[in-house]
Image (cartoon, each protein chain N blue to C red):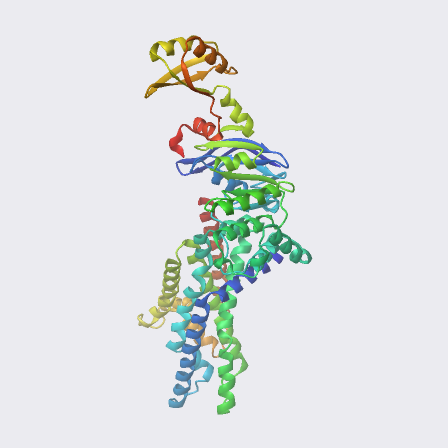
Length: 251
Length: 313
């Protein structure tokens, strides 16, 4: 366990040692700030029952940075080490492959959590200034942030897998981005399948991050997406572990 | 300390290492010698636990490198050929990280980092970022990393490649000092280096072991059947060569002209030294002699001989 924490610490510090981290954080703050602004103006113009939390987590300004950020966080993790040759020193130290894979995954996830932390301030500021509750109930917060974390797990795992596939960070980023986008398109298919009660249309719900977020940010807790995200994260990490091992042994 | 039996590594159709056997005893410095692509690095990578062997087995400190890989790795300090380091870290920070990873207890971290910094002459650069260091310093950081957990065995792949002569000397001195506490397996294609540092040499070519002995014995093996250069002015080189061939201890004679001089290259029989006989023969025939010499056999020649020619260099 000590080795895992040492590896995890190294992953986190290496993430913050590179300028890309700060570029990503700035980009993320700017876009989420703009998203917050868009959410407030949406509330100003609608008379419905939408809450600030719902408005914030269901706009296109929320989804675009979310999808873009994973390739940027994860492209480096395996590709860079494999290209620099540091994988050789790393794997000849007495550490196990799964410790390395899991530490890298956890390091990326940690960075992702840090990215989202400031967003909590937005809602505090919103309530302080307007005197209106940002969410209908506490469950709204819990749901939205739990969904953020769940999606974060799966997308980070996908990014790690992409990075383990290649020595080239650009290739890793493109593969990760495309894979996450594909998942999104499955969800979007629902808009092209007309009839209600259509089995295919029903099925897309299980894969659609947009639908999941819509429910969770209203405080509706559904176990199906939870199982979906956690189990697919494990499957993808398992695949990452095997590809990592395979590529090393073939080297 | 190291026991290798029939170790083989294939990459697809290419056999990089082909059933090699050797052992390294505690306290030895063994040099791996071979042309590029001979299988030195592959063997070392297998021993270090980075690559699994295709077949055969090897153990380090009694632990099998494949089935007890983690235990074996705890006893090994490995410096890969191109010295990969995390360029974004500071020297002391990097060594501390590596020490923790290799299982040095928390309370001994500071002490160990201090020790290796001093041993490798890195005191002044402890706070510097590795990416800003010169190649020589990086090499020493790599060495410091390899020995930070006080491993029984150090595996050093081309430890002096790409360094300038001063840096090479520093690294060699360092390795020489290490032999008191560690068993060392190092690879090189610089022969004088191996001759200087190693108590035993393993010459490997095309994935097979071609020769394995002490540098002295290897040299002696060829030295016994060495060549003798004999320069003289003779009237009829052909007849002279035929005469020389009759002398005791001479196996073969070839000659070439060098102006008025004839240069004979004489192949001596094993364990024989016909230089004295040559001298008498020359005085009897009143030849004018410029040189009778036996060029010292270097490992370079041994190497060329066993790996099949100079073109491999």
